[in-house]
Length: 106
Image (tube, rainbow, N blue to C red):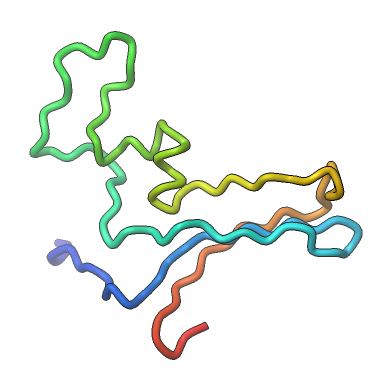
C-alpha cells in the first residue's frame, strides 16, 4: 500500500527543456516554467464534475493543463518555441528532457 503523498522541497526546480539541432548546430534552446510541487494527473475525487458540460470537456480546474495548451505552459508542462526566419525550417534532432535542480545542483 502506498504511503502518504510526498512533496518535493521548494528549493528543487523541475522543468522541461527543448533543444533543436540542424546540421549539427544547436538552433533552439528553451526552458519551460517550473513544474509545481503538486500537479493534477487525474480528477480530484473531492471535487464534483460539472453536471452539464455544454460540449466542453468535463474536467476539474486542476486538470485544465491537459486540455488547454496555455495552461500547460503556465504549469511547466508545455513549451512554445517561436522560430525566426533565420532559423532552419526543419530540425534533424528535437530533444526534450526534464531536469531537477536545487542548491549545489546544475
